[in-house]
Image (tube, rainbow, N blue to C red):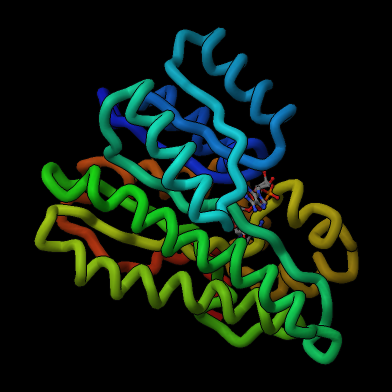
Length: 249
Ligand SMILES: NC(=O)c1ccc[n+]([C@@H]2O[C@H](COP(=O)([O-])OP(=O)(O)OC[C@H]3O[C@@H](n4cnc5c(N)ncnc54)[C@H](O)[C@@H]3O)[C@@H](O)[C@H]2O)c1
């Protein structure tokens, strides 16, 4: 098992990539702390993993609030499992407003959920990883790596996630804490499906995705498993595109 005896906090675990990571990590022996604002879906995840013999707790958690990280997520994790080895900062929202429609309120919301949350999560786990090391994986986007029409604020927040990943990797390296980012391309999840299933858009995208297919949440979970595990012990500070080759076009 690739994550035996590892304790992993996964945010946004009720849906899409976070859900796939929770199942994958549990199958590989990790004990899971699954957090999300969607409690009903979170409860289903927790019950399903427990039924399969896995160890998991679910925590209602809005990633944009410092208090919830420090007063709920960390104490509940330590009380259940005594340590923290892995943090996956995955929760995020997409912004559908076109650039000219975006205002300060939309920017503030995207900033708090997509970017500030990553800083809060890393700050919260740091004291508990410093003495023994750990692995942090931040879910960014190919929007951080390429020009992308439309969602300027989304692009800005993901650019911030990719940049803070590099900075934190430098800061935390001496403690044996690795910090990496994954940059998903066009991945079918509840967030993206309504958009990606549009036939015209699909025809256009398959023209710019070398592998001529959308990715699946499991593709991101597989990459996160590698970066979370000791197999990637000498890798830190990278932004790993998982995008069917989109960013090389
Ligand atoms: N789907 C894609 O094509 C794609 C591409 C690039 C990046 N991403 C990123 O991948 C990550 C996962 O997205 P997904 O596609 O699985 O989407 P999803 O909507 O299926 O899952 C996101 C989860 O985050 C949770 N969430 C939203 N706001 C939250 C908050 N304030 N606090 C806690 N949880 C919150 C949602 O409840 C949901 O369960 C996001 O950061 C997203 O920006 C997705």
